[in-house]
Amino acid sequence: MIATLADPQIGVVGTRIQTPAGEPYPNGRRFPSTTLAARHAVMSVLRPGSNSASAEYFGPAIGRPDADQVVDWVSGCSLMMKRPLWEQIRGFDPRYWMYLEVADLAWRLRENGYTTVLSGPAWVTNHGGQSGKFRRNRPLWHHHRSAALFYVRTRTGWRRILVPVAFAFLSIRLAALVALNSARRLTTRD
Image (cartoon, rainbow, N blue to C red):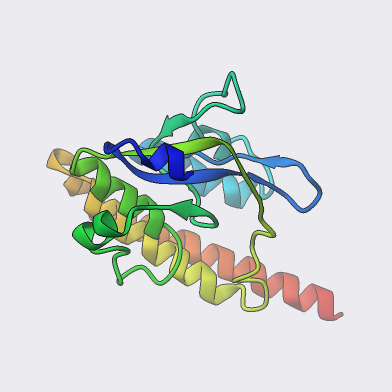
C-alpha cells in the first residue's frame, strides 16, 4: 500500500477483502448513479441477501488479482492515505456518522484530481456488520441519512431537481426496513 501511494496522483489506496471464511468480498466500488442507487435500494428490500443489485456497485472483473486497480472508492475497513493530503482535504466530513464517508472522501479527492486505487497484493479479513449488529434500526437510520447527504453532494444540474424525490424514497425505504426488523423481532420472540 505504501508503494502504491508513492504515486502523487493516488489519493487513497484500499485493500482487497476476504470474509472470515476466506471467501473474497468485493471491494473497489463505483459511485452510484441515481438509477443504480434506486435499483439497489429496492432490490435489497425485495430480495435481501441477493447480490444482483450490489454487483453493479463494484468495478469490472479484475484480470490479475495481484495488480492494482483504479476504482471510484473503497471500503473503509482498511485504507491508507498520506497525512498531508488528509489534512488538505479535511478528512472525513463530520456530517457522516457512518456509511458512505469513504465514498464522500473519494468523491472530493477525485474533484481535486486524485484517484482511488484498490491494492492488488494487500488483503484483510473483515468481520463485516459488527457496528450495527445489536441495534439494527439505528444503523439503518444513519445509512439512509448518509445516502441522502451523498446524493445531495454528488448531484448537479437537472439532477438536483430529484433531491426531494430521493429524500422521500429513502424515507419510505427506511420505514419499510424498520417495520421488517420489528416484525422479525416479534416472530423470533414467539
